[in-house]
Image 1 (cartoon, one colour):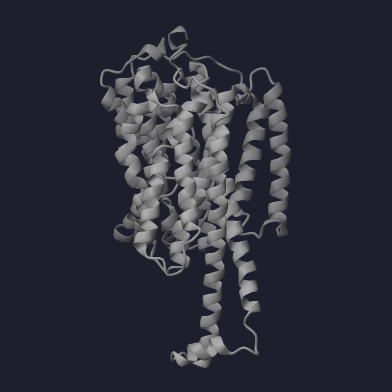
Image 2 (cartoon, helix red, strand yellow):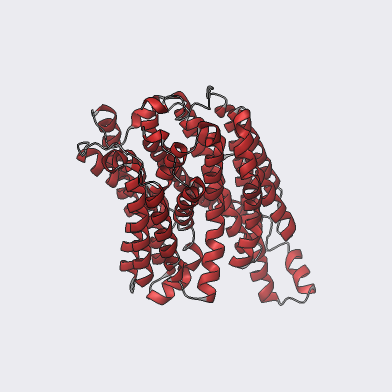
Length: 507
């Protein structure tokens, strides 16, 4: 039925769908570098301004698993158009915000309507392309998913430096309106079957409370010193209780708001585990490298962006090649190659040192791009391969939700590990400097550094080295995560080409 529909202009429809997703994924990172400016303009501390990121992440995480329910209620096309238009309106309101509470509220609304956009785009692309070309559509979406977070900080920094921070939100308005008008026009004849599923209020409330509290714990844990903070302890308990009720209720309710039973499909289960762990590790790399460049090597945020940017080159160049020829290859083999390359780049970074040059950093980023180019499309194909056409939007929403949650866990864990291990190494290194061994100070003083300055400089050097050793350890661990994933992905079973194709016409 709807899966047989082809829009009048396939290329234009694809551009409309991809632009909306690009805009939504871009907004997860575009505000990061602008936080100090936003905080200064709105008269709050930089620490308080991080709620601009947290509020968006919490709302998106809550809205994602509701995609399946919303699709059944409103239909895919209508849900996409309204989500995109509301995202544009919320972006406009973010730009107009005159105070931090207003900005946080509008960011929360923006995140809530952003939730369904990625899984719906994925589902619509699969439905409008013939089975032989679905790999191409998924590869294009994968490229958007990789390039947008890299472009976010660079674009955000440039706009904030050259114009003013509200423009990082205003630029979404014309893009969102264009994308929604194109899709509305191209897809107007597509028939979407809708039902009026009963609202599972217990599932909805426990999801909002459980996921909202968990996301706040993960975002704020490092700032609040984790379980030394009563706020984090209480929020964690609330989250644990709400999520326990949510899981039990959703698995036993006849018409759950989030269909966790999709995990009964083997490929969906294995594919989702691979996606969550690999994306978590990939997200950790994207978080640590720019921070390390700025903290340890003294790069500005713009130059840190330039050093990280080569990651996006190969995914852009290889997207259509991967999309065109991947269907002839075993998806598990492609995913294994991706994990191998990404693992190798982590091991290469585990040998970095404080004097490493720009080219070495950029070259490893470029090489990692090869792994990224081969990663999203095969893993997405595997996890969607044994879902029924009417399960794809819900499955895509659930997988993207777990991926987002995995990224939040990863961000908290890697930041904590990096800081914690740096303190340990700092302590070990200072053990070697005693009042009886003045050679480090003597060396510095011989170089023209005053006695008072030599102690401060020595402390700074030890701190830098502590963070460097810790950075190397974290990357060594991430390398092994990718190696283990090679074994995990081979637990999936072919065929991987049947996604929406086999039973599409019968549904």
